Length: 79
Image 1 (cartoon, rainbow, N blue to C red):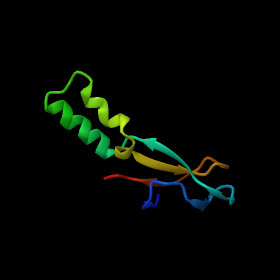
Image 2: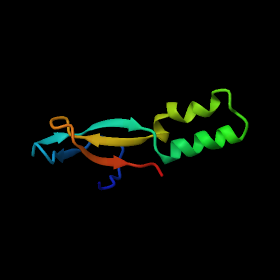
Image 3: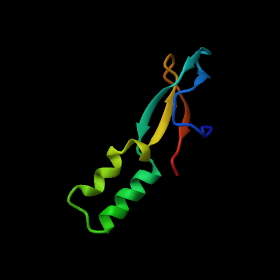
């Protein structure tokens, strides 16, 4: 899967359907999110504060999918 350099939707061709469409973006937890969660937990914030990185959109990876065939096209990774 190629790495995309932008977290915003782009125009791409679906691999199964062959249609040119604007990608649908979905936020998914990535390595950066998990590292920050672990770091906050190890620093002593274990009462739920360690889950804050999962609520911050700018810390999440972005998955790009085709709106027609639902095939994953690209993934923008923060780390």
